[in-house]
Length: 392
Image (cartoon, rainbow, N blue to C red; front, side):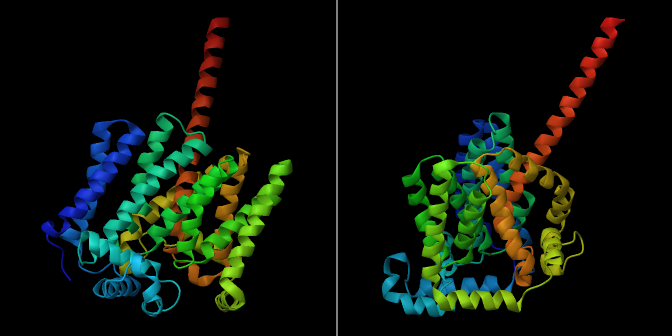
């Protein structure tokens, strides 16, 4: 395999550039910074597929998605005629999880029939996630002004997200966006905007049943757990619990007894020591000790390890905010990490990508709180020194 021509990459370049530019201007209000961010996002994509790409960092799953998407494209199958081609789509997907094959089909329609097309769509998904995720963080974690702008830049250029979204064709970037959608819906619900929350969550949950079914189930578990561990809340707490229970019951009925039993059997078959699994999931991959196919993660992994203390500090900071959403947010991460800790097949770095938004929040909040603590300490010492001098 060899790199693609710049003419083939022109349309996705413009799409990534323009969307990033609009999102950046809306968040930062700074045209020069927005152009710089848009160029970084689009140029990185073109640099990789225009000069570097040789198939090294691709996997069997990637090409399965490509082949399935091409087959659906060849037959003219899409959302509009999905019902009448249902059995064929299930066959292409090898079961119910066919949504990413359709995603590849639409990427080919937008950007051309090539491996880079769904990757370009994934880059666009990360831009949307950065924009919405920044708005969510500003609302729920008190990020305003410069803090909001810096978080947007951090999320847009987050090393792990950049690496995964610009190199390989994987569904975890789409899942990352869906996580942000569901987190937004929980935020809306907890702020009394129930109809908006349902309108946002319902289609996302529906798609997730055909993409990665356990995600909405774990969101419902996290919502229930965060409500049960809350110290107060009164009738509102009971309402949250009823909604979470209803969601859980609906999803379990959808999955069915056979599906639930299959999931239990799969977890049992791949169950590992949870302590070892938790550490492995959290620290995989070891920087500069990866297989050749994962070498593109060496630098992001090194930065991930370096920011680990700040991420832990940030998680505690978010929890200590004490709001219903902040408690839910930390619980949601712990619920997903608990599944990963006991299920060996989910402990690779790819499955952690869908949690990258939450991890970016923890990293950023940890660094922010650390710097604020340092500044408070420095200012306190300055005041003590000034008082000492004035007394003399």
